[in-house]
Image (cartoon, rainbow, N blue to C red; front, side):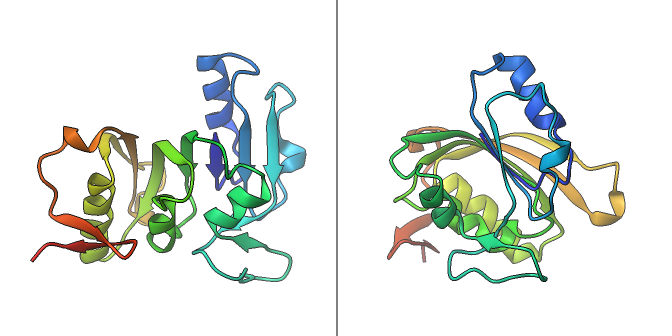
Length: 184
């Protein structure tokens, strides 16, 4: 399980552990702030990484003391490049989803079996591209929930699961040069 953007809240990981069993999952929790000391002792097989997610490329500090890495670099740093799949990829990164989601689908990385993402008010064309690209990559949306705790942020939580591309009607997107492009 990769959990990006904890903000010191470990209820997701604890809930996963309660559902699947203690020690069944390996949790990698990422946040650029230092919440490791707040990680519950009852959360087993959990690893805290003090960095955030950015678009793939050279690390760009957001502010002094903060580190950011691309997903591909993160996977390599953790030695997970030969793992066949990451079963759950949860991300709440306060807007970084729009700049990073292409990297989630990189064919040279482990498959993300489930993507749980909180999205924040995007321009319409980016949101359309986001949803179309995920579907073209074989992801079906199976849950949506508006964030009512902080309505001014305009955030909604979406859950996607990776299915066979045969599940979907013919897509309007094609992969060309490792990028998704709309069919003419």
